[in-house]
Structures are given as structure tokens and as C-alpha cells.
Figure 1: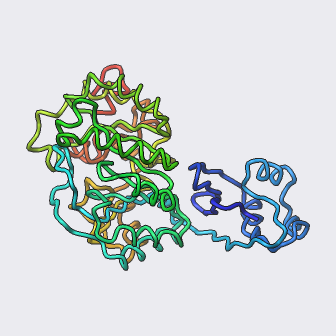
Figure 2: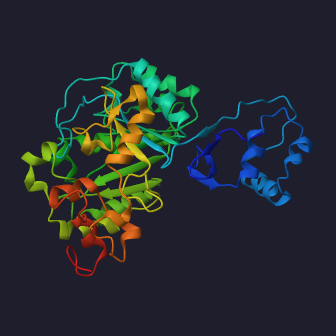
Figure 3: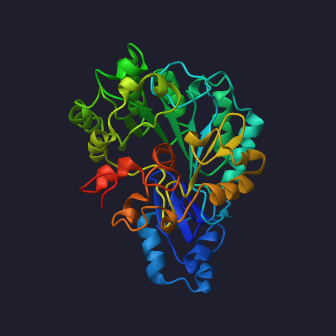
Length: 388
């Protein structure tokens, strides 16, 4: 039987995905066809008839991908087929309401809009059918959604890795215990230590860190997301020490684009040349890497509470469709907001394959949608932006 928490997907190539460990295994077509039949009620000798090698089978047994069963356990093995490029990661914003008023929030029109459970179910179902792997539930603050727990229960009938993105301030012991049965990871935003409260509100750091402690007590893997700004630039070594000691599974560091509330709080904004220095911090895997010869976001899109679909949250004002037809919306994104690396102005850059041209929205703000992202130039090139 294909072990619980492993799922099959036909992306650009066949894969098997470990939902719990967030591991993706590329497999050949023979192994893919073999695993499709590992439902628990097909005798092992019969499964060997399709020519799967002993070496492949031994590997899958050793990795825990398949296990022997006496025939009393059964599962339906889905094998979702993805478009190309594959849509692997979905940022699903279920509300734009929040309990905090962060000075760097990118939302242009915060309010009390909520996604309806029917639309939520429709979105998740289509995402799974399109070969989705990770569903990132966000907002606003998603825990504020008036039917949050109902939405989480809907997810239990779908085979996806569920990550909750939260500011952590509303998480108590009871909520953490309930979440432990519903999500695979919680990402908490921590934007400094002493400086955190300067941009997120008095007492928010202590409440967020307490929320993290409740999550870990409940056995939920926790990741941390940090935005670099002028007031936390002397706290990165301290943050690295704290996040390592609490055994966060990952720590991602980014630099905010000047949109939303940050337009009125430019005193927080670091010069990009200095900001680039802080990208060396962080550890663990990223949430939505691009692959192949495509620019940033080749496997990601974002859905707003009203169901509009865009390349990412920064492009909310330029929707490419609606989740009533997620596949069509994704096709539109690929046509209008996803480029090949050789289309960029920096196509001859020696580190282009590594940085993928950086953030297209930031590039658009500076010199144009096909221009280099200056932040990545400063981070990767000896001469910085405009050199190399």
C-alpha cells in the first residue's frame, strides 16, 4: 500500500510527495504506474508484473513510501495531473480582516471580507485536481474568519500539505491543540525582537512568541517569516539564535515592497543595498521555489477572499481570473505574468539561473516588469545593481 501521507502527482514529471516531511521524490513512469496500484488490495506478486525493478521497490520500502499490508487496509490512490508549468503552491487568503495594523502590511484595502465555505471548497478541490501540493491559508489573520474551523474541516477530505500563515497573537493552548489535528505547519511572522512591537503593535512580540510555544507544545512544526526593516537590522544574529534554539523548521527573510501601509511608513524602509545583506540570514527550505527556466513564481498563485486569482498578493489589483475556473486563471497567469529567463533584460547575468530575476513586482516598481530586481543584484553581484 502507498503509505499514508504520501500522494502521487504528475507534474512536469511524475513525483511522489511526502505531505508530512515536505519531501518531493521524482520517480520514473514505471514506478508511478506501480504506485497507482498500491491501494492495499492488490497482491504484491501481481504488482510486479508491470516491470518495476527490485531496486526501485527496495528504495520505496526503505524510504517508507510503500508498506506491506495484510489486505485489511485500503486507500484510494489519486494521481492528479498538472498543467505545465505546474501549479504546486496556492496562497489562499480567506479574509482581509486582521487584529493588528502592521505598518508594513501590503494589503491596499483591508476590511472584513471573508471567503464563503462553498467557494473555499471549490478552490481547494480544483487545486488538488490540478496537482497541487501545498495550500497556504492566510489573510489578513486567518484565525479571525468567522467560520475558520469549518473551513479547516473541509480540508480533511483533501490530500494536501496545509500551512497556516498567522501573526501568532491569537493562538492559545486550546487553539493550538485543535490546529494539531488540522494543519501540518504554522508559519508565524516575527519581524524583530524589541523592534517587532514598533511595527506590529505593543505587546505583539510577547503574544506571538507565546503562540509559538503553544504550537510547539501541541507538536505542530513552526516556521518563521521575517521582513527586514530599519529597526530590526541589529537584531538578526539574536533572531537567528532564538529561532534555532526553538527548533523552527525554517526561517525565511525577505524585504517588503513599498505598497499598502508601507507607503505611509517609509521611515521603516531600508536602502536596498543595505537590505540585501540580511538575505544571507534564514535557514530551511523556501515555500515556493521556481524551477526550470522560468522567472519567480512559476508554481504559485494567490487567491483573494472574493475569489479573484492573481500571480501573488502584490498583483491583487491585476487579477487574472476567478476561482470559478482556476485552471483558466492559471493559464492566464502563465501567459501574462510568467516569463522565460531569456526574456529578461538581465538575461546575460551569470547568476540569473540562481536568482530567477528576483521579484517581478519589485522590478516593475524600479525599472519595469522585465528589468532586474535591484535587491537580488545587490545580494548576488559584486558591483550591485546595474553591474555584472
